[in-house]
Every structure is written in structure tokens, then in C-alpha cells.
Image (cartoon, rainbow, N blue to C red; front, side, top):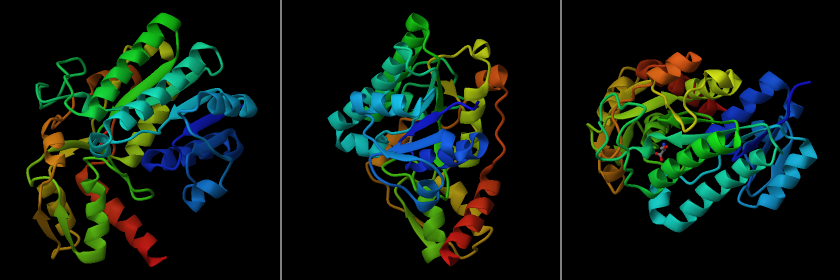
Length: 317
Ligand code: SER
């Protein structure tokens, strides 16, 4: 019998598409979506949904028992830019939710869990190009500090208590179904919406800020592949570096201009520039390739083509 999966933060940017993908694979009833608010109609109508605050251990445990959950994907988090504004709320949300699911696994109430880390674990002293799996980290943002600490706790629970936790350091993620909120890489999603709506975009990062990015289909496939892979093959129990493409705001503007020649881009960097400056430009993901066969499919132009096509369709509805 297929196992039952619980997604925490199912209405967010990653959670929405992950839930839909897992429902396709395992059957709708086997994938329980949960969040502190309701999500889009496709998600809400395709399977079970629970209003659930993942910081509340008792409520979480009750849902796990009720649905006989075996696997949890913890996608609830406060992203980098918002976390700078609300440091203690960010710390509480990002860390308490992780401890809750790690402890459920430690107590044998679930079998396996996925927790997302981020390129934000790296900081200004990290080598910027082809950032290695293991290197100087020293994150300089609240969000990055929570992700780096989280990684160490994942590693610790695996080593000390045998918890089967798996994790990826996601780059900036680009998708059309659900918008991100409060991140530094959000411009790479907003830009497509604005390009189609107004043929112009004012970017909050400088033209040459190159950051690691990934199209959502690649990110979902990576997540599912990592969770499916044989635990014995996994040499990293903190979090895997994962790369696909690297581009700057100027590069994405050029890619959009191939479809919308009159598209105009302006630059008004704000506080998010400092965050972007502290992160890598590109990622060495050879360990993920070696351990579980990771390989990206989407480059910048393919992402642009796909984003514009889907958003056009969505706007026409
Ligand atoms: N995309 C995220 C952010 O910008 C990083 O994980 O906050």
C-alpha cells in the first residue's frame, strides 16, 4: 500500500507544486496538504487539506496519528527578506517547525522527512563561484543562520538518533503556479508577471547580481528523487548543494526580450542587494549528481519560454 504523506506549508511556492506532483504519483487521498491558510483551488480540491500550525507540536502529532502519516515534507518557512524584518519570528518559525518534525521522527512516529535548506547558508566569506558542498559558510542573514543551524540539527538527528532526514540547499526558485513571498530571489518570478502585464519591470537588485536559480519542475523532481533514493547512497545528511543555472537581472531581461523585444528593465536596488551580495553566484553540485543522479533540465531560455507560455494562459482565463 502506498504510504501517507503530509506536506506542511502546502500553500506556498514549493508546497503547492510538490503536493500536486506527489498526489499524481501516490494518489490524491495519500497526500495530505496543510497550512495556516487555504491555498489555490487546484490544491484545495484535489485531496485532503488540514488547517495546521506546524509550530504546534500537539496539533502536528494529532494530524500525523489521524492520517497515519509516514513521511513529512516541511515547506513552511519565513524567507530571507522578511526574516530580516522579523528576526525572532523567523527564528521561532524556522527552527521550531524543524524540531517538531525531527522529534516526531526520533520518537518513531514518522519514518522519513524532507526539510529545505538554501543557498542562504553561505555568506560573504564563502567562495562565490562553483561554491563547494563543504566550505566556509558564515551566513550573514537571519534566514541563513536559521538554515545553517537547521542543517546541523538534521545531521545531528541522523547521526545520533538514526532519523532519516533528507535536505537540499535550493537556489532561487522560479515558478508560475504560486508566487514566492519575502525572498531575495523573488524578482526572477515577478519579472515575468510584470513583463506580460506592463512590458516593464523595476528590479530591486543590481543588473549584474548573478545568483544560482532553478525552474520549479527541476526542484520538484530533485526533491522527489532525493526522497526516493536509497538512504545508503546518501553521503550528506546536512543538506545537498544543488545547481541548475546562474544568471543576473540583466541576463533574464535579455532572455525576456527575445520574446518581448520592447521589454524595459530599470534598477532600484534596495536592502535585498546586501543579501544577494552575500550569496554565491554559482554552485558545485557534484555530490548530488554522484550520490543520487541529479541533473537539471531547464536553462534560462527554456525557463523564460515556459514561464511566459503558462502565465499567458493563466492571464487569458
Ligand atoms: N529564495 C530564497 C530567498 O530568496 C532563498 O532560499 O529567500
